[in-house]
Length: 339
Image (cartoon, rainbow, N blue to C red):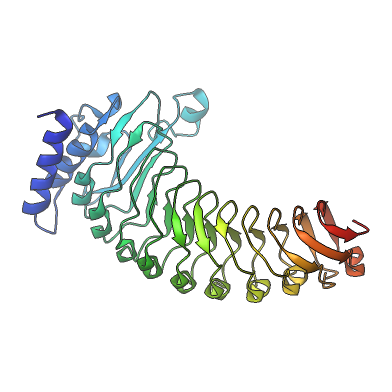
């Protein structure tokens, strides 16, 4: 039996036999199993004399000595990183392996960051949804495959979910609606398909949803407009169809909206041009039709307004001349007079 199989067997036994309330000793066993499934992690191979809390990349509660954070970012030991105090969390080399399910033994874990290791693969352990205190789950920039755990919504304390730049497939689980504390959702640049669940409108704390570069289909759920804290919504480079819900134009703090490179049809909602906070709007490379709404506000401040490669017609509206600022404006490859 190979090393990884032995470790997986040990960690599975631990998951079945360890009480719900762990100890510093069970944390040591979990971290040992976790690190043994990552090859090339030389700085993790030996437990210091002072215990698990002195292992680079591991943070413990100073009172209980329980593991609270695992932070393993690809980087280097440059003078810049050392000057910033980052050398404890940035590692060099070519790490390979997978995210062991032994991490699920760390019942006090609040942060799990393993990022930018293109040779770390495998799937997200389904048992990760049993970590009641987890607030940050960042596995971006690896080669993780499989699907998002179906019951991800159990992580009700989760604030950051970043699985971007991997090879994750399947759909966004409906249970995502249970992530009541979530502020950042980044699933960009994967192979995620299916529709955007309507339950996303229940994530009242969500301020950034980055879903671009996938295979999402169906229409944009109207419920997304209920997210009053949403500032950055990126649905670009998917297979989204249907029209843009007019309610999106009324989102009070929306500053960036990208729906480019989809199959969206219909007309541009007038509220988008009149939304005073919106400064980045990219609707290019769709099949939008009709005239440009004459609804620009004198308070509008656009760094980017890209409506190119659509089927828009009519003339450039007079109200566009009244905006406070217009940076990059692209109306090319339409049938707009005066563009």
